[in-house]
Length: 187
Image (cartoon, rainbow, N blue to C red):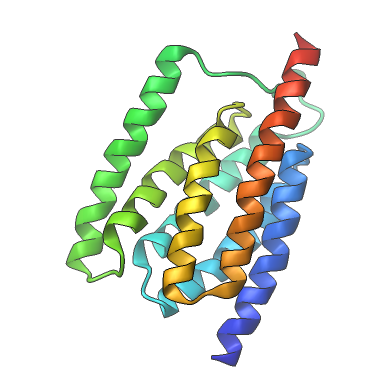
């Protein structure tokens, strides 16, 4: 148990570095994010939150994509932008479909809290992709996702990650307003 507490504490600090740098639009955020999610995947395996565990590997793939999307020195640096109404609807539908797709394997493998786990996973994939594309609305998806994961962490008795996801939810609110202000200035 001490090992997993240490893993959670390291994941907490790396996760905080990730979200702070994400709000500031720093490319290094993706590196801290990759390290944080790999540690979190170990904890999820230990606590049998299999959907969250699998999600972390998807995060790694999307984070690598984000790292290259946010590359400094590109001729057309990736600016913050908003979603069109059609893109917003497609994002919500993608979150619903992914949630449903996650649900059945989670039940089959006897993951705990499969409904909550599947819902947070489906929408988190969409939100991470939107983050990599610097879409403002990614933050609006992250707020309820993070609140849901706070509840999951409470139920599973994972206090360090519970604290981390509270911070993520607060930073999602801050990130939304910071990026929205930045978007308004650039227009």
